[in-house]
Amino acid sequence: MASEVILGQGTDLRGFSWWSDACQFTTYLAPNSPEADRIYNAGYCNPIPPSPPCVVSDQLGTMFAARSRHPGGVQVTVCDGSTRFVSETTDLRTWRAISTPRGGETVSVP
Image (cartoon, rainbow, N blue to C red):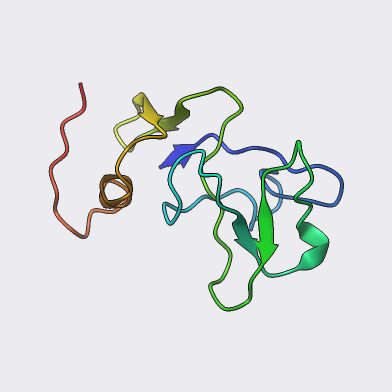
């Protein structure tokens, strides 16, 4: 339902809750992925640290990863209101499966 994201710097609006495009994340990329976020406008992409990596891509649409500044993963809130830590080593197929009810998977969380 919700995850940590890293705020962009300067004109990079990723992570700002008041900008509708930036207040979301997808599970296309793994948590804390070193791969670049994808955005449709170069003016909103500032890949210079401390901003997360990004590239302009009009073909794949906007995709922002769940990211945090602490090592090992991200904190997420699930639909039952609980919070969990998701490791950045979580299998990408599992990360994608738990982000949707469509597959009907059952995932147990310790």
